Image (tube, rainbow, N blue to C red; front, side, top):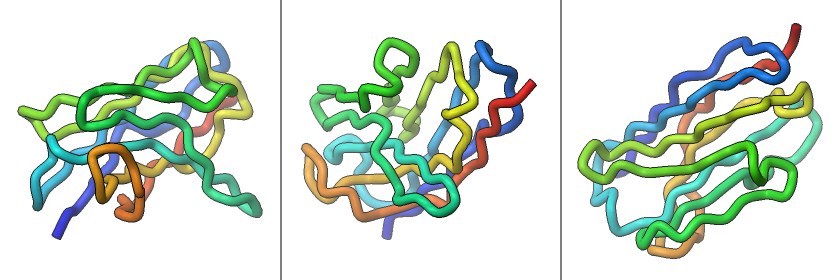
Length: 118
């Protein structure tokens, strides 16, 4: 059974940078798509970025040009580099593993809080 553990969240000033990590254990990491989602209280969880098993990436329009998703299959780790952060990026960020090489995200980590504030 896959387990996903996020880290790297915290408090960052507007315009600053942060890198989130997600360590995966159990199952085969390299053959599945991975993604980052985020959620704020009272709103639905939303997709931030995804990366397929072949490293094709996609981003929500709100983070394009600022965030970069990447994966290190040898370390079984997913990353999200967040640059030029804004207050609206404040949320709990969740790592997710897909059930296929392209998507179908139903496996979740516990989340890590990111707060953008001066």
